[in-house]
Amino acid sequence: MDELVRERIIKYILRRMDEYGVTAEHLMPAEEEAEPEVDPALPKSVLAQAMPKPTPGVVQYADASGNSWDGAGPMPEWLLRAVRAGQSPDFFKR
Image (cartoon, helix red, strand yellow):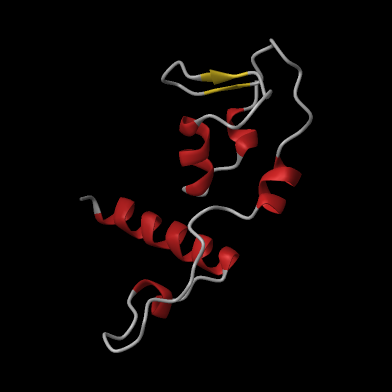
């Protein structure tokens, strides 16, 4: 892996960890300790403020792979994966 790419990935991960209050202990707990209770899903409040009201039938979000969503109904898996990875839904906004 290119060292510059590796460095950027590390910085990105550290920013997301800081943003969501995740520490190294959350990722690598001591063997004798039970794993900390960390909800893998984003808090609904984060998604609620990031998502504007839908306009049914009109594509509002799309990615480079051809996935799209009109904003109505539950968020599709492709967008959920991106948001959980730290990407803003606005990145996919049309």
